[in-house]
Length: 149
Image (cartoon, rainbow, N blue to C red; front, side, top):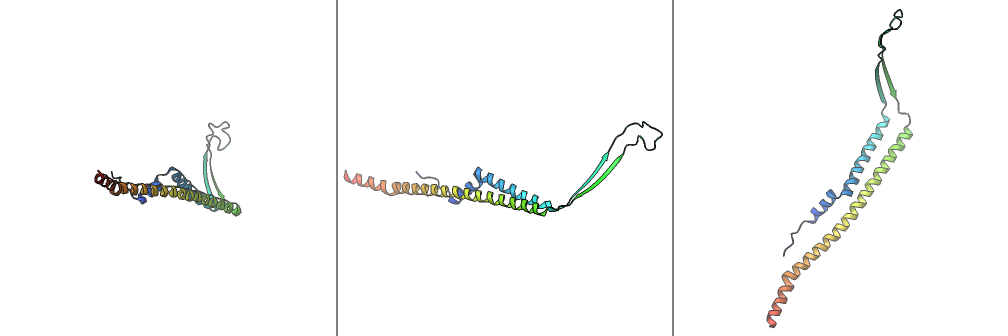
């Protein structure tokens, strides 16, 4: 009986791509990278434009000019980022969080890879023992038994 052999690199790729814990950590890493990029945008001034229409209805005092006309107001504002220390601290915090997640992912990947490599070693050793029995020991034992009777 021959066991179908697969490549160790294939098993390692399956582990890296298919493990749900590693996938979750990669997603968390991507999320933190986006948060870093978003935090860096705090240095860009915010510009706000607004327009408002107010329906007033019928004029109650027809003698007053402009009564009963619906007003329109337009607004413009700029939020200037002056809290650089706050923004710097936020960016440092985001980078620290990203480093932490990357470290957890690398640790988890190393842990899983070491377990996989140990199991692959045990599998290859078992395959070697099967070949030894099938190809050498059993045929020699049969031959010795047949010669003894």
